[in-house]
Amino acid sequence: MTAGPVPPVAAFGQPRITAGFNWHHRLDLQAHNTVHPPLAMLDLGQLIQLADAIVLRGRGGAGFPFARKLVAVADSAQERALSPVVVVNGTEGEPAAWKDKVLLTRAPHLILDGAELAAETLAAAEIVVAVADDGVGEASMTAALAERVLPVPARLVRVPHRFISGEGGALVRGINGETPIPPGIKVRASDTGVGGRPTLLSNAETFAQLGLAARIGPYEYNSTGLRDEPGTVLLTITGSTPTPIVVECPTGTSLEEVLWHCSAPIGPAILIGGFHGMWMTAEQARGAVISRDQLARRGVSLGAGVIAPLGEGTCPLGEAARVVDYLAKESAGQCGPCRLGLPDLARRMSELVTGTGSVAAVRAAANGVRGRGACYHPDGTAGFAISAADAFAADVAAHSRGGSCGRPVRGVLPIPGALSDGSAKLAVDWTRCEGHGLCAHVAPDLISLDGNGFPAFADAPVPVRLEAAARRAVSMCPGLALRLSEPQGAASPS
Image 1 (spheres, one colour):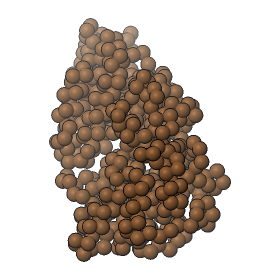
Image 2 (cartoon, one colour):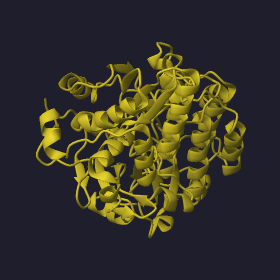
Image 3 (cartoon, one colour):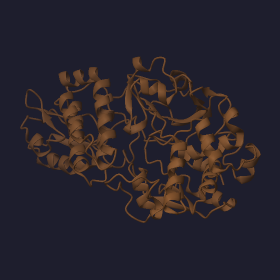
Image 4 (cartoon, helix red, strand yellow):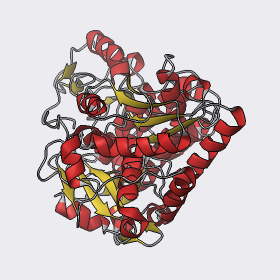
């Protein structure tokens, strides 16, 4: 079996998690055992001590200390006299992220090493490996489960490839056979998870890092990277890169050096942490290093390890508005902030692009959803929008003055289905337009009127949810001046 459709991989310094990738497309069990030293089994106390010694934190976004998860699950299992469940979250619903899918596809046994360690020390009832239904990594992990004998039963579960499917509560629901959306109330998986059992849930890279550390020991693991944040991390570098690339680098590596080696020009700003992340301007990024703690001091979170510089030549506000519109559509729609608040936030971002809105309106819409949702999705989306409005203040001013910054929206940030869904763009034949203004009344979320009464709208793909309104506006234009056309030079999503 060869590696599937995943990006290329590069390593800064000696590769660890990605060791053997230069020689093997996929590390089957024999190749895995040749590349990596023998795996030492540990008892629960030793495993907790190891996780503490290497300062292992979750690599899926929140960065929660893994040792504390182990303790919480072990205590809950003992109190309730139930065998726990170990869940590997390999869903990676973040459109810009690839690192976990690279591991699923190319190094599945390193993930299973960590899961096996946790399951054996916790006396778990089973191991569940959750993957998305996009097919990436599934065949490789299925083969890996067949290639080895694990100490407890193991199964693979497929969930829809959606942004929210990998949220902890949503994933547990999906594994339990329910709709994979957040439960609406805060339920700790360590208390009640899969099948009602205490559940240790962490993402694929976290388990791979644990498996690596158990093989090489804490001293060797901590010999690279920062003293208080040792080891290496996996990053997905996308955006202005010629193609997405997954990078393994020691913590403390210069952010600018990583981007330079990936041929990723920074441009006006860099998105750190993915679509629930924050923007850093080029000035703010100067001197930054790859470190959760040090990036947090600069006001951003490394999150799921996504780094996406915009580069030059695309409209920053248009790119950000596309993401907010996508996130609004990806919500579970089960609470007011998601059902009503996020579409409103998407409209306010679109108004910034057309030059008819204001940062104050974006902030008001964002603050209207913050802290009120059934999960973190509204908060993450609101944070992204406010960060974009702040980082692109000069572009906001340019759009406000002239309705545009003069750059097209090239689709640098990967939105699923961006070319098959929502790819149509509005255009005006100005020789026919007489400024009736009917289009703005028919599609107010897309079209506004400028100071002279003529239509103004973003040079960006029409969101799927607004296509019907756009077509009505086109059909009702008295001068037959409005039309839908395919975007020119749009970049293919990663």
